[in-house]
Structures are given as structure tokens and as C-alpha cells.
Image (cartoon, rainbow, N blue to C red):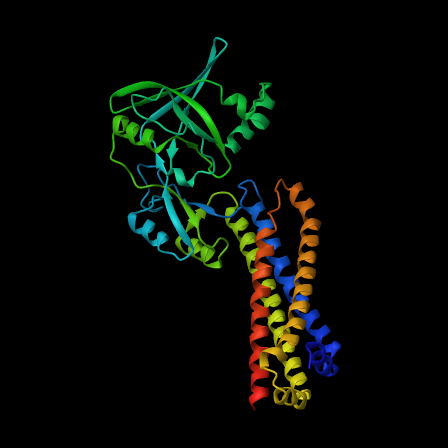
Length: 403
């Protein structure tokens, strides 16, 4: 008896409706999973941009100032110390939602900045801070300093400060507005004084930060300058930068409120947006996986019922010398063909959806991610489902043969 004869014998009890039901359920589940994964990857490219409204990875912490802290000396006893102790820092670093903690080091000496242009000059007292390089959102190649060897001190400025100058100070005083490129070419001189010493050093603005609201210099410069010009020992930091492991986690807000810590800007709220989006995407992917699992069991139930209907025919084939592998091969081909069609259709839906939302993402200044990783995920999932289908079919037919 040929394979075609075996197929004609077995196909009579195959229900097209049951196969269509499995294909539809499997398609819906896989399409939801792939579309959710691609959406998450595309939107992640938006929140990884530090200018994004849902950028989320960092918090800048300070203690809440109450009363008249520091007005009558180092700090008012009634107001409490606004610096972070080693115990405070260790406690923050131990939280499950914290990846790393960095300290802001402040200049413990006097800093005066002067700009000379066209024979005129203007100057102002400044504050300087430094943090570990890994916490910067910009990494200029000039960001280094060696005392006695470097020709200038590189400075990173907050973008907010440049905006305040251009759209606040300059417009009201009739002064020229400047771009980031132009201000980077303006020569600066810094007067460092304290501990009975005074020294002028050249400086240059080499970058602008969206993350940090400060005037930052390299840690190497800050350590050298504090050692040379500070009249007091190094003090505990008054600000910390925290790299989050779970942005938007509700535990973050409750912890900050409990300890009286404040965050700079609205990054805590931005983190909530990212966390909410992550949760929603996870739920959607979970729903898709549940539908796919249900579709798997629908197929198994359909095959079980089909084999029960063909029980007598299967026994007859066994008597004629056919093996379980020869009989199961026909059902394997059905499953492989249906699953391949489901996979191709689900990937088409995912690609169409990605093309639909790519225009709004580009309007936000973000380029959608490549779909190859999502396609690979879909192929992997469908391969696992298909292997599970084939193994279950083979096992069921073997039981029918030898029952």
C-alpha cells in the first residue's frame, strides 16, 4: 500500500474546522507576542534618548532642605544635615531597584570664571562639580585632565543653562544668542583660590548634558584642585546620582518619600511612564503566550479525537506492516504546513504594525529598531511549538499502535 493510499485512508476523518480553529488561535497568539515585542523594542529607542519624555535610567537625589539649613554656620541643628553619610549611601546602594550610585564631588575652594572677547571681559563666581565618568550622557574625547600637562580644563555644561542664557538673559539684554558649537570655541579662564593660594587656568566647554543640571569637570581635576586649594577636609556629598535597575518601580517613590529625599527635575515621573509601558507590554506578551499555549492544546485535542476516530484504521495499518513513523508522517506534514503559514502571517502582521507606528516614532526623533530579532524570536517560538506538536503526535500514535 503506497503513502498516497495511507493518506486517503486517514484523511477522511480530518476536520478542517478544527485545524482552522487551531491555526486562527495560534496566529492570534503569535501575532500578539511578536507585535508586542517589536513595539517594546521600537519604543525603547525613544526612552533611551536622554531628551525623551520617558527617559528613565537615572535619578539625581538630594536631601530635602527645611528651615534655614546652613544660614547660621555649616548647618542648622533644627534643619538637619543635607549631606549623605556613608550609611545613607550604603542603604541606597542596597536597594533592589538600584544598579549603581555615584557621588557629586563639589569644589571646596573659590572659583571665578572670566570670558574675554573683543577687548571686553565679563566674569562671575561659579560652582564646579564632578561625578564618575560612567554617569555622563555625553563622553567628549577631550574629557581628561592631567595636572601640569593638560593645556585646559574641559567643562560639561547643562543644556538648561545655555537655554536660560539664549532665551532669558540674552534676549532681554540685547546680547547675541549662541549655539553649542560657538560657545565651545569661547576661551574661558578660571581663577582657583583658597588655602592661601590663587591660580588661573584655561578652560573650555566640550559638551552639554541633558541629564546633569550642573557645571561638571573631570574627577582628576577636582581631586587635584581640592587638594591644592581647599582649606577643609573632603566633605560628604550633598547630591547623588543613582543608576536605576527597575525605573518607575513603586518602591522608588515610597523610599524617597520615607527618607525625605528629592529628585532633580521630573525624572521620577518619566520613570513611571517607562515602568508602566514595560508592565503593559509584559501583560500583552503574556496574553499572547497564553493564547498560543491554548492553541497548542486545541491542536493536541483535535489530533487525539482524530486518532480515536481512526483507531481501527491505524490497527489495520499496523497489521499490514506499517510503522508508527510512517503513519505519523502525514499528520506531521499537516502540522508543519499549518504552523509555517501561521508564522508567515503573524510576521506579516508584525511588520505591518511596525511600519504603521514608525512614522510617529520618527517624528519623535527616534529610528525604529530592526525587526530581525523579533523575526528570530518568532521562528524560535514556532519551532518549539512545532517540535512539541510533532513529539505529542508521535507519542499518541505509538500508544494507539501498541494499545
